[in-house]
Image 1 (cartoon, one colour):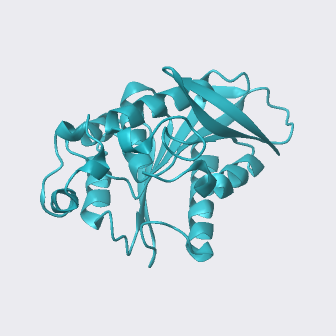
Image 2 (cartoon, one colour; image 1 turned 120 degrees about the vertical axis):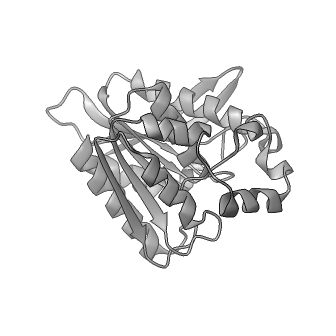
Length: 241
């Protein structure tokens, strides 16, 4: 396996990424995965999944959203819409890589990245999708920096409001590929009703599954939970790409 730093342009700024390339195989084009990290996180948090997928023969890109990790930009100015621009830039980068089989190009998104992954699935024909503890946002928050909002308003929305008709739920309801919803049982940020809504709204999926990591909180710091997430994700993409 080879790990290569890459630079991904987005507007006048640059995203910092790592490309995990499998050992040489007989395939000239490889199944591939783009990984989208959570809000305020970084590509380092998904290095284990990048390495594990590459060991399974899957070309994998992990990058920092603007304002995160080593990418350009100021996180205090990063709107939800800018996150989608970054997700598109990362996806396009890998789609156009000479070793990427873009008919077998999947996406893994965690939390904020899960929300953006759902939106990518409406813009592109993505055969396999993993939404891990995916976030949910109201459409009128699109050009807002989430951290600038009243935390209580966001929490109330996740716990009490309906999600039908929002960008991400519309995208998931139209999705016709294979989708896995990964739930963290003790998630203190994303209520189970959010992950269940994503699962239930995937009405046109060719295949849909939901798996739960027992006792896991929202952010997976404990190796026990990380190892489970790595295994589930690798097994899923090995099966569906």
